[in-house]
Image 1: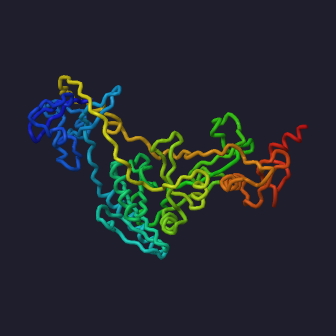
Image 2: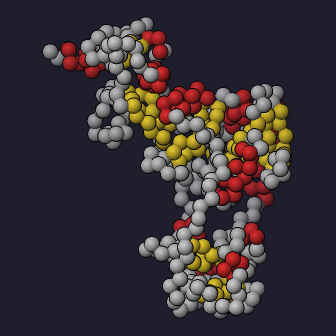
Length: 419
């Protein structure tokens, strides 16, 4: 990690390992160099090797010799580290035409369905502009953001929060599985195709970002492996997870861009945020059928589908090791987000697992089965709630009434037949 950088404005070398940065006469230097790149000249800080006329590994790799300052994390210490700026991507003519064609297709689709739609609409406070704003009959406003090149996660979050505060639901569109916007806000991924095919009406399938809730009883007859035992057996519990249409049982029809334009504006598709199982703030944003969302909320109590402003956190105290300045280019040692390829974010795996302890049993004294249990059992067994009833042997809910009804659940039938 680089502990030094050249300040092109002052013409000085800065030693980031010293409390005074090697310049005691400049008390505001730390604040100046740690300011956001958006608030200063991007070429203010330069790789020392590049300034000295030696090889800058970042520049020779087709990237940037210019730098920014961040807090590192090394063995519990928080040193200041100079890292190379990624090259700011400028849309190529082809990408610009892709963007324009997608925007126009969204507006034209909405208009064809009788929805109000406009392009390049600023928010009320004019802090951001939606590529396309679609308004549904109930007043739902969807702000479509077509983002076919890299945008920082913080920018995605900031613009999404601004949209929500202006009563607009953001919907980001990507074409790359590594796009930083994935899971930073409600999103959808489409294929990377020539703009003429987009404008010409070629099918635009939503490849990622739209899912269905699948609820099933974990039994030998289930087509799915047990997420608790990782396929080693069946736990007889109720599981729920979100799946892509192609991975559902039975398989769901693929969602087209036109489908999402209409259903998001009418409220038939809604955004959902599913925290990771391990807790914390990380999780998954997705679009889902409204009915699936209601069931999920009943089971989990999750009610925050959209990005909100995060509380301000105090930065850790900076650690100064007081070392000699290192004038070697350290590109490639600065962390994944600077030098390595961006990770694949749209993995397509099932997510948001939720498990009820067991298929609920009918209580002897009174029907105390909760609405959540009844809804989950209904979804898992594929029957309406009024066809549910207790197994005559173990008391667990099963399909007791209506077509294909039985007196005993499959587990009890197997035991009784083996007697």
